[in-house]
Image 1 (cartoon, rainbow, N blue to C red):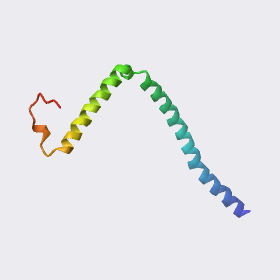
Image 2: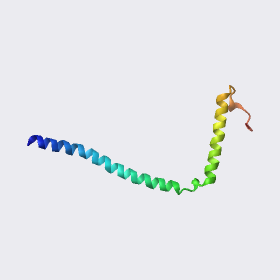
Image 3: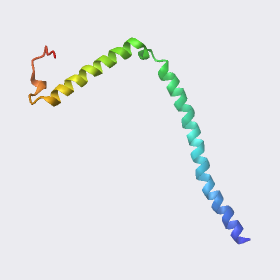
Image 4: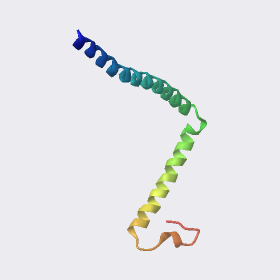
Length: 83
């Protein structure tokens, strides 16, 4: 009888953290869905802004690629710098 009581107590002690983890997971999951919906509704997510951001990232990557390929310090070039 004592062994059964110890098993029940061990199962209860193991089930409490699992249940707490499941509750927290459900709470965070619901908040994440709401956050994703909010991000989709932002005005910055229109195609024009995304295209402009992509173009800007391409220019930055081109400058970084050129800086990696040359021995010259590209940061010290004159300001109206064009590739």
